[in-house]
Image (tube, rainbow over all chains, first blue to last red):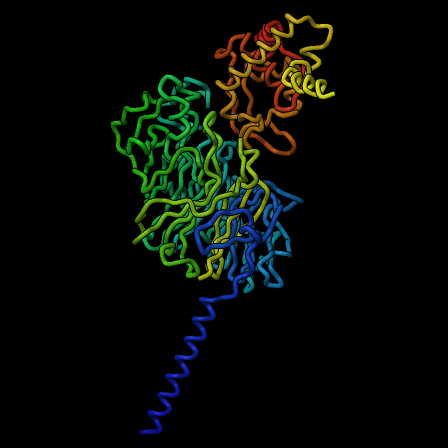
Amino acid sequence: MKKNLFFSLLLAVAIAISIVSFTSKSENQQLPVPDAGNAGLTLPLGFSAMIVADNTGEARHIAVTKEGNIYVKLGSVKDGKGILYLQDENKDGKMEKKSGFGNYGGTGMALNNGYLYASSNTDVYRYKLNDKDEAENSDQPETIVAGLLDHGEHNSKSITFDNDGNLYVNVGAYSNSCQEQDRVPGSMGIQGCPILDSAGGIWQFKADKTDQHYGDGVHYATGLRNVVGLDWNNQDNALFVMQHGRDQLHDLFPKYYTTKQSAVLPAECMYEIHKGDNAGWPYIYYDQIQHKQILMPEYGGNGTKTSGKKYLDPVMAFPGHLAPDGLLFYTGNQFPEKYKNGAFIAFHGSWNRSPEPQAGYFVVFVPFKDGKPSGKWEVFANGFAGEKQLSPGSAKHRPCGLAQGPDGSLYVSDDSKGTIYRIMYKK
Amino acid sequence: MNKIIVIAFLLIPFCGLFNNPDLASNNIDRKATISAQQSLKEGQAVFKKYCISCHQADGAGVPHMAPPLIKTKYVLGDKEDMIKIVLNGLKGVEINDQTYYNPMPPLGTVLKDKEIADVLTYVRSSFGNKASTVTVEDVKKARGDTKTALQ
């Protein structure tokens, strides 16, 4: 009996020691040395940053494997490659090895269930990964979805997944506000906007079924002008999307909007999306100052009139034209508790605020509790554009994609110079 | 010596008046120069009203959306082609392997001939561009061609 007790105690001590050593190992994981001056970024206290790869091309969305390597979807093919695979062989944090495949440009890039999913501006493909998360037959992807509309304007097809085997794809509206003549001053909106039957919304497809077309999918949500950043929220078990609001209120309807109003209106909206939702484009926009859905001037609005019909309200509204291109719910353990399950949003930066100064070009954080925003948004990482940015073309870097590393580091891509940043937190 | 330097500095603000050979060659009289300056000023006002939101204050445009106006063949090339872009609009231009998708609206009914001449003169001599002025006659001629050649 005494002997048994002794052994039990010994076992308990052994287990305790192993737990302590395991936890301390995972929590105080050796982080790489950040760049001097945090690679030009301004971050909250305790955070640091490094550039892990540079000049990759138009780095749109990114995905980080459990080994800490990075897949990058390029907006345009560079050196014959549309997807880059970046590897850190000596584990110093810098991605010194670069290879690539996929001869198409696009935006979507995500890992799901042993596959790498990538989107062109019309199709979604997937590549089977081996146990090291490497695409072995990278020249023979499966086509999951084909034939989505691409008329140039708003043609990114971003992707995300739920936990029930479904894939969500945005199809942006190939128009600013469904005018009879797109972006022509004073041109009115087309009644019963025909764009909405095949664009301006989110489509749901099966993640593992090949050769799906519009007819095989579910028209999951409509009235969304253009979504580039979207992510599944596991706490809420719901899709969240960031909509790019309409442009040029003053240019097109100067009698109703001053340049100052036009610079900040309408809101860039975060929506929680459920099947069948309608966010109202092109009939209404959300005004974050009046906290109201306002009738679009193309459909008889004047800046204050509301619509008779009620559409989906945003769960959070941001100032206009900041261009949210990446959304990520943070589930890692590296960052302080307040960041857990909150949303990071990469704002590409505005072009539509002239003659007012352009804005955005930063990564924002929104705290969440139980799947709902629980506080105000705050700028998390800034300084991407450089000191002076007169226009999007002269911004040094433009945040686009977000990904979480296996150790909880946050990765940010830039589709201007192709820089990939890693943001870390050390206690 | 110091005096010369001071005078040289005082002249600097006026150098801009003469740095465009098409606007102010020695053979053009003062009156023409003043009218060209006026045209530039009015062209800038038109640019700020109708063009700046897409093409930006620095003429650099917006990547993948609105093309730059800096030293491209569209801006420095044939005047008539450029006038017709303003009159009829344009979509899907490719410059240096980059496609610009946002449509430029046709402004033929929005802008007067004089406004088109002024704004194109301004664009062709700003953002590092140096190309000849565009006159009201040029615009009239292009409009005439448009009616028969295009649509």
